[in-house]
Length: 254
Image 1 (cartoon, one colour):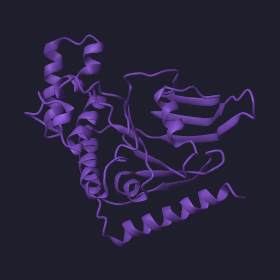
Image 2 (cartoon, one colour):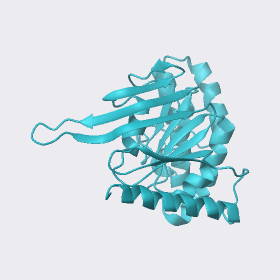
Image 3 (cartoon, helix red, strand yellow):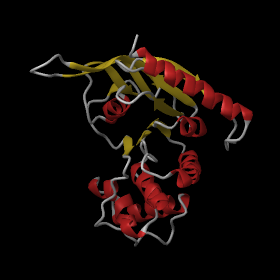
């Protein structure tokens, strides 16, 4: 069991008012090699949960463990991709991708071999000397994912990786992301607001409720890959998850 989230609670203290309870009690398990998405109304704690799995925030109560080892801080075992990609603008593609490898002290010869593998995987060979400003949005996304994958992480964490992309490019980049992740074979946990994106990319979709981020539903997406967005099955999953999102939003009003 690579990732186990057991009855996690997250509270932000407030000295002047009542403490803000972001997550009341969330539990889930993610198997090795699975792609799992978190969806739910704004403010339900999706990104907070991802951040705790990444080790950037601590739980108030409960346990998050990778292979039964409690997560208590950031680690190369967990690669993180932010919504805006967060590439270093002063570094070229190659240096962006190998940043963590240099920080770990990996010899240049080994870094070069790993960089070659990653560039070939993402069809970016020949672009390693370019800077982020010279790349399209899709290429920047691939570089951000490669940087996160460079150290062979056990789990890849994606925080709305396509949230800033316009609609016309979104499906193209979803295709690229799906291909890249499948080639790497890495376990993935992704936060998204896009139901169709969750259905297209995920093996399972976890729906979080408003008012405490508890788990409303754990939906297995039983569709062959590559996914056909025009199929009746795809549309049924999309409609069912949209209905669950409405229920998750209305939970806050009950």
